Image (cartoon, rainbow, N blue to C red; front, top):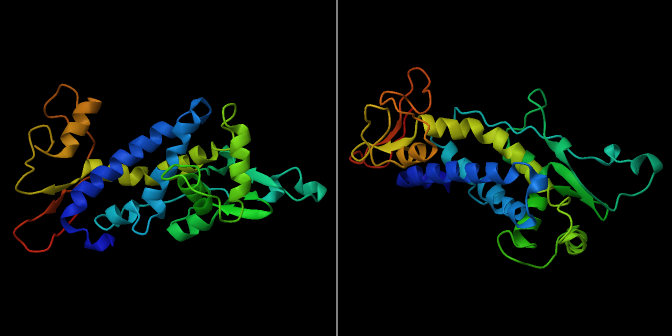
Length: 256
């Protein structure tokens, strides 16, 4: 469980930041991405939001004050042209209209997000969870499997027909990924601004970087701290301190 992670928090924060960066790359201009690139979004969303101990909940333990707000517009048959004619929609997956605006209702509970309807197949609603799990567990995002749950056989049969000439259906993953990136960016920035450090191993230098810490290599790779040694890579909020692990005090302690 996330609350038992202890000394692994530094590793969890590194993984969270890298996962968000990977996700951000894959959702950029989804129409230009290959099916394989888009399929890779599914395991990233599963890791962050769906696993038994989601990575989001793990890093959230150390910084519960950081807001996480998912803005998603549920897909409904009322938006479909077939609904006005009284016809049952056989298959439909939400497009970019799923991505909410800043003023839209914010979902702060992961279970509510997972239940949000994002499409329909065989007259059955497809939720955020079911779509991600289908691409992760049936089409091969994590492992290649057999369609079992409602709607999966329809998605699978359509995938075979679209393979090689269209990524329209699987682009839904990119839109769900954009919703996740928008919601998790404050956490991403919080970690980079105030990472968890080991007080004996990670000493702060004149540039505000921590020696032997993963964030130092991260910023060097991005060349975000420029040529001025005193320049901070990310502006740190007033009175904020890096979250520290004190190795001599028994169980790990994290403070803000």
